[in-house]
Length: 61
Image (cartoon, rainbow, N blue to C red; front, side):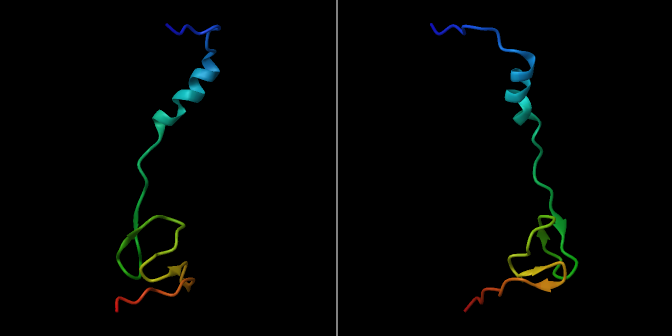
């Protein structure tokens, strides 16, 4: 059976457990389209970011 050679310090233990406190991502409602998107991200449907056209929207046809 594997036995650790040294005791894990509280700091190292905290580093390992830091991922337990991760929260689910936040979504906001877009002002123009009303769709939900991540804050500070480009709206992928319209290609808009902060009122400016960044990406060309993909056409459905």
